[in-house]
Amino acid sequence: MLIQQKNYPEGLNALLLRSVGDTTNFLVAYAQGMVGNTEMAEKITNFLVERETTQYISPIMIAIAFMGLGNHEKGLEWIEKAYLEQDGFRPWLLLTIFEPLHEDLRFIALLKKFKIYETYKILYAKSE
Image (cartoon, one colour):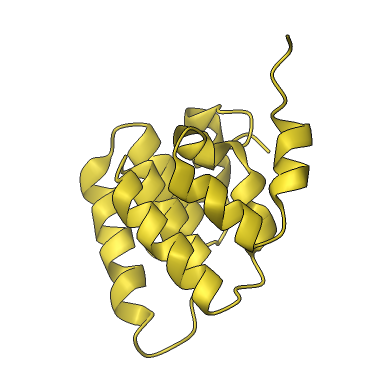
């Protein structure tokens, strides 16, 4: 919840207090990137990409790691892969993590393909 609320330092601390894999977890990678620990975020992200070739890791989880690095293009690539694989983690696309993509028409098209665009519109409706 702290990450969702964009409280990245406290969110990272909370994650690191748990045994969530401080060198392998996608949310840790995201939070590390968001607090400026780019080297650690890249290390975890690279681990996830490499590991994905031998075991299932949700493409959306890898997209989240890339979003923490500010690499929106790579994030979109992994979201597209998630669509092709019919990734069950599609509701995660509604998190604030993906707000930097909200103006990107490719992201909107993917939300529509995933059939979660209507929910997205409700969550992020701009007041007139």
